[in-house]
Image 1 (cartoon, helix red, strand yellow):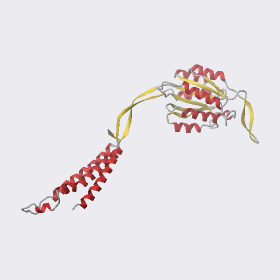
Image 2: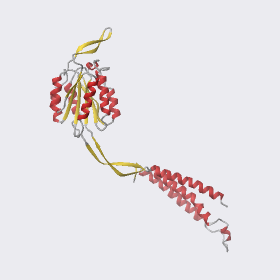
Image 3: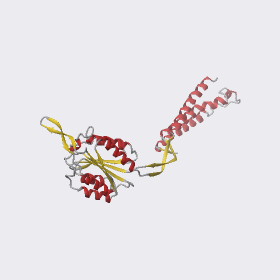
Image 4: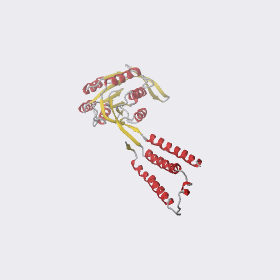
Length: 327
């Protein structure tokens, strides 16, 4: 057993001082002031049973005070040990947030579908550390690797287009994702790269970023997002937003090359259902079992001391009532 707040045990000095004061007062009251030749006057002072009961309320009150101090110091037990098996790996989402992700061949559009399905994927993997990198004409980290699911999901919901320079810098996005994972000591490190376009900006070539990922042992799963052929895009006109059919352009050869170079796979998502199936497949493929040894299981003990203190206080009340009723 140990105490969460051991410094509070100094309060045990209070009942110790109360005990010393009580003993001193008892000895003072017992000093004889009158000598007598018979014991009859002392017999009238009370029976031996009453003499003992007279001290019992103080003893019970003192015991309750000691138990309360121990309870607020929060005693805990960690004698039990649990071994936990997990399947944790490090995963970073590299998500394209260029304006082309507003195309409505997904429901309601590509970027909303990508976020919703990614959140479902996150919820299915509670043991993994995950992070988010977004890219368009440039890239930045939306969320570093974390196991805080609530924060991760909230930051995923905040991903949107229009916050950075437009374009499709696949190399920058992948390089940023790898940089967030290069110092990780996880047995398996994965980037899920999702884009709907052709690399047309950025300082780092996608092939170079793939080589960096390979050097750090990061496996990349690439996902090309977009219907085959044409897709409806919202276009701003002088009369408002107009939906126009535009050609879908995805550099599938590039995405396949990145995946092959790093030991991953390329997938093509043409609608919400297909994208969900892709994440399910990645979920099945990425399993890396690890073991956490000697994980302590703590048991809170303050409750039993608090209950014992309450019992002492109730007994004190009961004994005090009985003493007052005795002749």
